[in-house]
Length: 258
Image 1: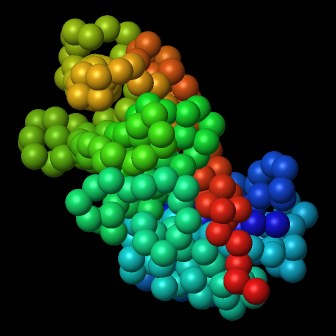
Image 2 (image 1 turned 90 degrees about the vertical axis):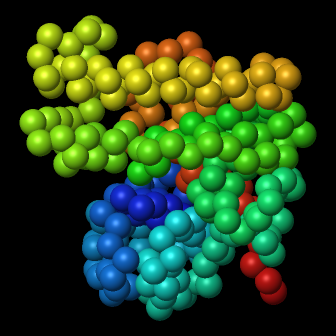
Image 3 (image 1 turned 120 degrees about the horizontal axis):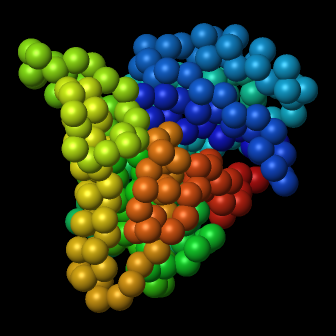
């Protein structure tokens, strides 16, 4: 079984793939100082409840955008599961496509993993919209080449910044308001964030299409993707497991050295 670890700025997602399906997914808040032992105590108990033992893990793969957390996640895989993890990075791995940006090593591992899974499943040209700490748009051409993308502030980050910077504006949750025009402060804030991000998705999708010169598919992933997928025809596919599925594909393309 493959232990897949998607370590983002907000959460770390652990999942176990048995070769045919995901046996379990578990989410933990990202803390760069969390040790391998802390991860292990938490994770092995959850795995046991799902009927998965430490010895069942025969491979591990990590996509991490928090460098300080990677050290402990590596040691989790080595010390508790006896596996040298495959760490997603632009250089030194077989991705099956070129990374056509100025500095490939600057591209977040999750973005490349998303591109791999999206092109394998849907074929390009396409854009992956990932609703994470940042909202990212990653562009893949018809041949599968990664062309770069767009990075915008994440939805929760925008809401928190609005609350902190404006003394009279409260902290609100992300929700789909019934109307665009808010009749009080909270609905007005929710409308600005929700419909503002819908406009961001639609506008950037059109501009990316214009720049490529052909229609694109738009695939949405990330924690808040389900909230937005039904709000606009610009999003063609909702794929919550895109990053985890990409780690499975990357592990297949890069078997362990014998």
